[in-house]
Structure formats: structure tokens, C-alpha cells
Image 1: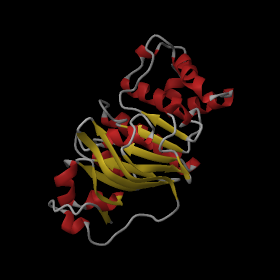
Image 2 (image 1 turned 180 degrees about the vertical axis):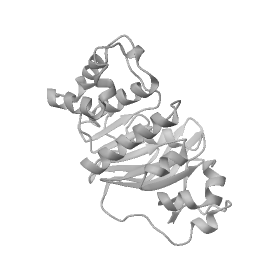
Image 3 (image 1 turned 180 degrees about the horizontal axis):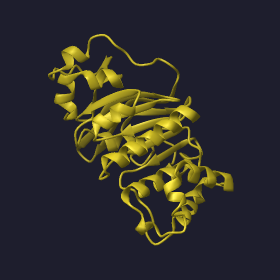
Image 4 (image 1 turned 60 degrees about the horizontal axis):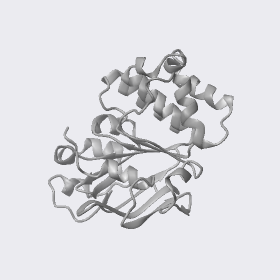
Length: 259
């Protein structure tokens, strides 16, 4: 297990002993990333690694810096320090519009769809800045998400929350990213739908070698599907370890994860 910044919070005496995460080649390597909103430091030297074929869950309370971390990695927020390296290439200062071509897709919190357009039209709009996207790519998305395939001609405003989440994830997958950033995909959804979406994400990771960086408030569900967990507190990494080890650490869960 990797502990950072010398936190003395309850539970870390157990969490800091032994264990360890996988040591394969990182597809995404975040090194000492810091970011601020005016005088407020939202990230303070965050480092993490995400490997191909693995889900890395970023966990923590509201205000821990989870969403800011994804926004900084994808270029929506400019860091004040640190580096973001994707497959050996420094992309820290790359423009947001270039990230898709470099192999990264970001699904932000909120399930943003264009309500008046159909499912199929939403997918086509989402593909416009990704360059040429073939029919087979659309068919692949519909194969992955049969529920939205059944509703491809329906306006997006008629979809349920879970179906909208499937649509925005499918839209991101059109570019065949190597790294997928997922921000709070379970927000507002019923547990059964959350399990279905997480199961589909796990299937993609296992079958296609996708690397997923998953930000989640629902720590229990995230750890059940993730390989590695990274716990943030006030913009700093508290601990990094195997997801099952984190889930089993009762003191750590109570101190930082709320279950």
C-alpha cells in the first residue's frame, strides 16, 4: 500500500502496513498534480497510475478533489504544478480538443445529452470532433448497450437516467479511447442500474484492455468493480491500494469512505 503526506487519521496504522498495487506499465501516469480555484487549492501534489486492463477508483468525501482531478487530467482545468503522461507522452498542456485524438475520453458528471435530439443524433453530434467514425463504431455502441439501441429513434428526453448514462458512455466510446475518465456514473441511479453499468464497464476493461479512472461517491460499489483504489482527502492522496484491501479496512472506510 502507498500512503501519502503522512496522514495520522484513524485507520491508517492498519492501512499503511504491507500490501501494494500492481507494478505494470502505467498507461496514464499522474505526477505531483496540483490545481487551484483562485486562492483555494483543490489538488495538492496528487500522484497516481492507471494501467491498461484495470479500473482505478478515485474515492473520497465531497470536496476531496475527485472531480477536479479528472478535469485537470483532461485539460479542462490547468494545473499549477505536476505532469500528466499518457502512454509515455506528456499531455499536461495539450488542448482539450486534442485529448480524444491522444486516446483519452472524459465522461463528466451530469449525463449531458441534447434532450431534443434522438439517441442516434446525440451519438452523431458527439462524434463530430472525433474525426471520421464508421458505421461499425455506432453498431458497436448499440451492441454494448441494447437498451439505447431499442430507443435509437427516440428523443433523449424520453430516456431514463440509466439510459442517459449509457448514452454518454457510448458516445465517449465511439473514439475507441485507451483511457476513459468516468465521473460519478452512479449519481441518482437505482442500485440495480448502477450494478448493470459497472458490469458493462468491467466487461469493456476485461475484453478490450481499456484503462478506466473512475471517480465515485459510492465507494462500496466502486471498490466492488475496481482493481485499485485511490483515496483523496482535501486534495491529497491519503492511501493507494488494492481495491479489496481497501474495502476490507474498516477503520479506513469509516474515516474516509462513509461505509
